[in-house]
Length: 168
Length: 84
Image (cartoon, rainbow over all chains, first blue to last red; front, top):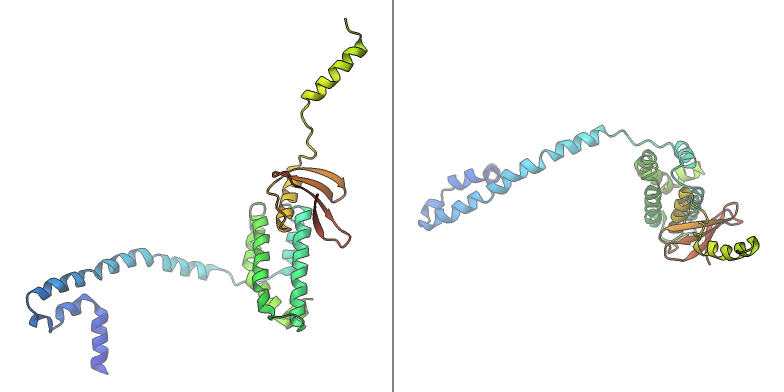
C-alpha cells in the first residue's frame, strides 16, 4: 500500500520521477534521447495551463460567492412587467396569453391530465422566458436581468404541485 | 390666359402626381410593437413599415416584405394577427 502510494505520488510528481527512474540507465544510449522529449512535452502544457486557467477560476468563484441568494418577488415582477414602457400593449398581451397557456398546461399536468409530466414543459417554459428576455433586453435591461435571475426559482414553483397550487 | 377654374383643373392632377404618399402611421413605438407581436405570433413579416388604425387595438400592419396583417385584440382578449 505504502509503496503503491509512493509510486502514485512519484508518478504525479512528473519529471522528477523520470530523472530518478532507475531502469533507464540500463537502456542503451538512445534511451535518454527518447526520454528527454517526453519529459519536456508535459512541462510545456503544464507551464501554460496554470497561467491561463488558474486566474479565471478564482474570479469565477468570487463572482459565484458575490451573487446574492436567488429571491423571488412574483408580485414585483408582475408589476414591473405591466408598467414597463419597453414593450407595447400588443406585445404585453401576446406574452400574457402565452404565459396563461403555459400555466394552463402546467395545471393540467399537476392534475394528471397531461402526458409526459411537468418536466416536459421545461423547454416551452425556457423558450417563453427567452422570448420575454429578447423583447426586454434593449428597452429595460434591469427587468430582463430580474427575470433572468428568477428563471430557476419560477420553474421551481411551477414544477412543484404544492407551491403551484398555493400560488394559484 | 387660362381661367382660374381651368388652371386649377390642370394643376390638380399634377399636384396629385407629385404628391408623396402619406404614411398611414409613423409612430415608431407602435410599429415596433406590431413587429414584435407578429414575431411572437410566428407570422412571417420582418419589420412592420406602416400601420393604419382601424379601431382601438385594431390595426392593419404592412410588413417590409409587402404582406399585410390585421392585428387586433379578439373577443377572448387575445392578441391576434390575421393575414390579409
